[in-house]
Image 1 (cartoon, helix red, strand yellow):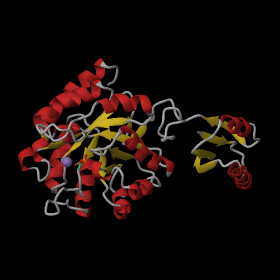
Image 2: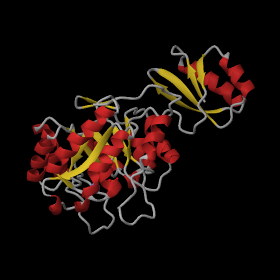
Image 3: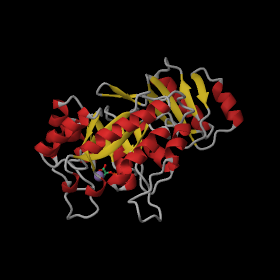
Image 4: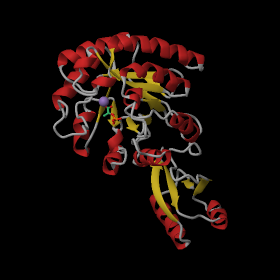
Length: 336
Ligand code: PEP
Ligand code: MN
């Protein structure tokens, strides 16, 4: 349940109204959206209390949202959210493809790949400068100089930038280089990080935890939305199952389900989902057919030399083929 207060409500009037709610044992969390106060009701809100509150002079309307995630829910906003990045709208008719290496490795690598990413028809360049690696002895990323290589290469080819933020302390630095913050699967429930990104103005691509239910995923998105950042892009990247032949299992149920449940755009990362380069093209097409708004793909000019995730990196030649085929599927399902 969300109580929308009238826009002209003063702070003192809101305080008075909240006092009244408390007397009725109605607890709320207050947010501001478009200069309007919204009170999210925590816990129970009976019919008679609702009727009474509805009549209050300060109340504009009450929205019945029974789901635990409120702002992410379709009940809150029916039409799909479109997130503008570098001239394209993620969540609009045209699917958006983000591609690039798992890790930023060098200036040459990024410039070479950026050129291919652009000529393939992709919109956004990916590359990790801070890497969440399973082992502490694995390559951890180039850090700040990596961000520099990534941004410069993207700029040369008029591409947008997406890169991962691992830590609250790195937000300020990364914000200077990126167009989209990527929150990795392992950080989906890093609440301090999500809260801080809620105060940022740049879009956040939130990857689904490899263990997470849809509800947990949407509640993680809610943390960012509550903070005031409406620009959240969900990303399905595969979950842990009993199947050993692929690295993860790409759960395309998530795309269909989340499209019914939320107004937020959903993209798919088939690279981590399958963990094998030879399967990426098929699953990219399947993702778009299932209704995804875009793709996040690991591509490298020399995949075998990739310092991280080499098995799943497709070549830039393969990327060009993939984009052509994916666009055909997009057109077949009424997208472009
Ligand atoms: C990545 O995109 O390189 C990455 C580490 O992804 P995930 O968080 O999905 O494992
Ligand atoms: Mn990777």
